[in-house]
Length: 374
Length: 167
Image 1 (cartoon, rainbow over the protein chains, first blue to last red):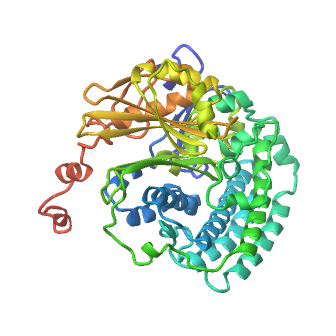
Image 2 (image 1 turned 180 degrees about the horizontal axis):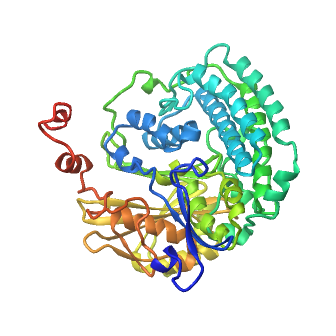
Image 3 (image 1 turned 30 degrees about the horizontal axis):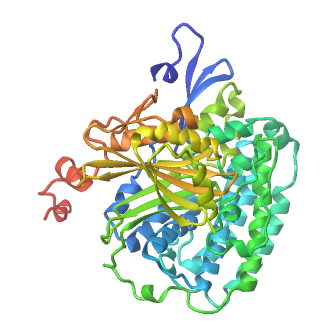
């Protein structure tokens, strides 16, 4: 589509690149066609982070893929671990122990909190509120310390949530330390909620996405909730033990960048609530299914297919896995929420905005180029 | 008692030949003929399946078929429906579902076109997404071996470090 890619020759339009090698866009390029200060149209240019995970997984066994699944999105590796583990569990018909299910929920929610914290960090930075950025990344370190203690890795847990349960049980002092970090998170949420006029003037009424457009463009997660749809996979189609916890799904009607930002803040509180309940009810027992206690490298995956949906911090994540009875999956398809948010939604929202609003809209969608490019 | 998903499926037009497999109370897998795709998708969207979660393609190379899977979600009934249809692998072409799911379908089809070489009839923009300046075969086809391609094009058998990748 040449006419979408280039400025028309008889106009005052010109090209403006936002990314891909840019600290403010995160390994992702958007080509903007600009006239004066206004964006006439935008064209997303993905591929900078394409590693071909879906194909790589066809060459590997589930135990190896569990480690590989960390890398699908750097910012919330544990959630992607969980999706992969669930897909294999369902294909192999494994009964996951209760304790492992609770640990999985705790880890997934901790991962959601730190991912949302990064979102506030970059969003604050994009709207010229540098204090927010520093507060966020400072507090994120408390959670990374927990990850290091529990999984051994700060950012990449190396397949901590693996088929059959979790790779190792929580250390004895973990519940207390997690509770201490949750108190720190409450403190941070109060700090991040400090309203200031810079934030208001740069986000209110900016990047408005109506509900019908959100559905048409395939938006999910905080983006569609910011436009007024009450939907959350954890509530609508509960996986693991989410149906046992009491939490709300925050919704806003405005559909602008500010609404999405507020949804994120409220979701942090809900995640803290879930972890507290899970820690209270944490049962005793094994943390991994008996058949996976000793890693079996050549375990065959029974023939079948499965589509798993999870709610990760960015929206709806999916994994379609097919097995033909061999040791490796026959085909894996990964559905990242950013795939829709960064191409159709972004191109739609950029039409007709001012250049100065581009970063605010871009980061209000809570995007991750890694799960788009895969 | 019929489950929730069965009562929904009953409402789908009985004109079509549909093979149904109910997996859970709110999940079903449907196999259909690709000629009825647009009609069935249209009636499913009217029944509330407004969210196209993903489009996947599986390359069944031994049978000479591509399988295209549409993963649909209904916000109203909270139900997952997976619509499967098979097409010929040699000249893979299928009708685009843009008239039904609009931009959402467009981008998924564009991805599958790049990775598997499927033609989506009626999709106006099938430009590559991920691979720049790529002239080889669609990379996710089963008969395209990444490792072999890298050995042939980028590695050197006489290089001490890379020799390990040759048998």
